[in-house]
Length: 323
Image (cartoon, rainbow, N blue to C red; front, side):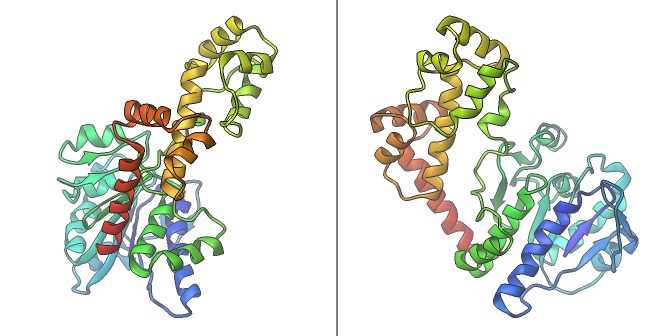
């Protein structure tokens, strides 16, 4: 069942709902029954002004006895929980009858206000994670995750991250092949790993103002295997090395070397998560001549080794299936 309040984003409801409905289509039978509940069963006004009709009252649902597979709380723009006291009071009763308790985006604030995330690892939209940690210190906030699975609790960042979380739930229920079929049906990436950063290295750095430097900045991610030293980048921009290095740092907030390393680490993480390439092959693919260099960079930036990083994901995937 979905719990929806005024101010939610349509994609945070429609994205996961369509994924579950897609499973019914792919399997040719109804394995998920979708229910949407709101306070008082009233229509909900979404961000952007769209209004959706709701068939179920949240309070009546809380008073029921029917077992629930998954409760998904859609947060949207809900940060101030004081105006949603009735909804928050209803959540624990529903959670007690649910095998899984899930939130999308700021839905984590509603779960936290209900005490349902105390002692659990959780995430939310990157721009709100610090508020979740500040207001609910008993929640173990992981701010830079697409989604987090901790026992019976699943939480995700906003918007499209709800689709990733829904695909992860489908994989837990029906296996990777079904999740992949549904992802292909909707032409989306087949479940980005939950540990992937919410914001890419390119988006974390402001775009350069100088057109030649900005062009180099955009070119970099597709050419990580090439010589990306300052001399080569400055030559590509048609600027002296000293002027390029100074301007790049002034306009992006990062040195060229640090920015290149950001991109290479992110690419290495992606390849470790999604392929069975050897560490040496990954190192060469992203521009390091020796695997030892990648080992040093991963150790310094992530506090682990490439092999342990990949093994942790394997264990996480095993836990996903077992839970």
